[in-house]
Image (cartoon, rainbow, N blue to C red; front, side, top):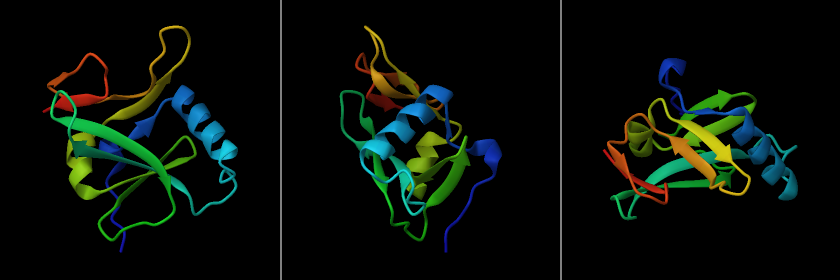
Length: 119
């Protein structure tokens, strides 16, 4: 059984992140396969203690939290979701762009690279 959290606490995506996710899914040949989704999570590591992770997946696990925003299906394991409540996935490009990043209101501090954080 898959649990779904109230959309008030959802993980969301910006328009730029949506465009990049769909572009990457297209490049991987999975954009038209509805079984694939964006899996986001948190793992231990990095200079601040916790690091974000993202990948495409097509296998949901029993305690996964499932969201959909702007047509992008996002899946997160329950433990990671505790750190990602109300987080927005964004994308920055250009000369100083850093790629995907998480606007996480739960992070008390993050490192200079923007890939790790602490709560």
